[in-house]
Amino acid sequence: MIRHFETEDRDAVIALWAEVFPNEPAHNEPQAYIDRKLSVDDLFFVAIEDGTLVGTAIAGWDGVRGWLYKVAVAPHRQRQGIGKALVDHMLATLAARGCTKVNLQVRASNRAVIAFYEELGFHDDEVLGMGRHLSPDEHEVAPSGAI
Image (tube, rainbow, N blue to C red; front, side, top):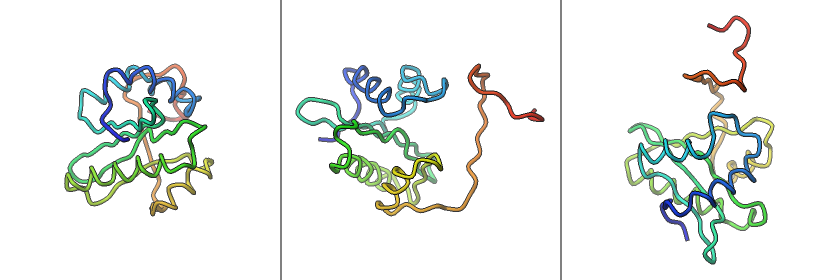
């Protein structure tokens, strides 16, 4: 079953993310990430099976494009259709809001996840993703010459 995140899910989500995303940068600290997301909208879903949280998916929507974030499935439940169900749910939710294109970012070295998304119809847009942190983070160093 896929449903909206509920407050009672917080600890299970944090534990899942620690297992699935073990090397996340400090700016993705789960407690703050969850709080920031919930302060913006309700595009935060969880997959529950037999009363246990087995997956998560978060989406963003700016009125033009949608984004997928934190699609995570418990390792012992991967390759059983849960990730696909979460992505399909998010795509349908975004489409219902008027979204016509959904983006996501995957580390280029993560071939298994790239293959997963390709099977779901995603493709490389051949664009360079760029980002900038708006607050200092002791774990990230600005490239030399950066302002």
